[in-house]
Length: 195
Image (tube, rainbow, N blue to C red; front, side, top):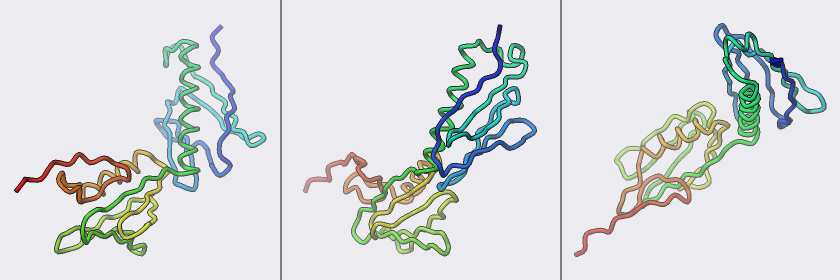
């Protein structure tokens, strides 16, 4: 007999809030923590409820019309549930503890400034005027000095995308490596012209 309902429990950080929101096309699971909020989408053919017992999250899954709509075998159902749980655990950890990366600005006279009121980063990178970058929602920045800063985020995609955009303001040149780079990032340098 094909089983179409499952109950599993997983452990998540205490500062994580999790729940379900109604949507016309999908089941939306929201995960909220100190480093932001994210949503996971799942088909309407999967219904599940969320509860807590002794600090553990109880997930109850029920698959509607499993044979017609999903066309999955029992083994694949277990794999799918495992994928959902792993997504919840991974995202919850990121939103609870945060991901961080450090940027370094290299070059004579190069500087970075943080304007908290306007939520802007200002860069002095060898041009006649400063370059500005609007800090996206969900990104936290802590200046370490005038030459380096740390970025924190609960989403690896948003963090990496922000890093990419900041680096594009002044990519390290291939001769002296002047510019913006990640800490411990190796820059392949070319030899300058010999006199």
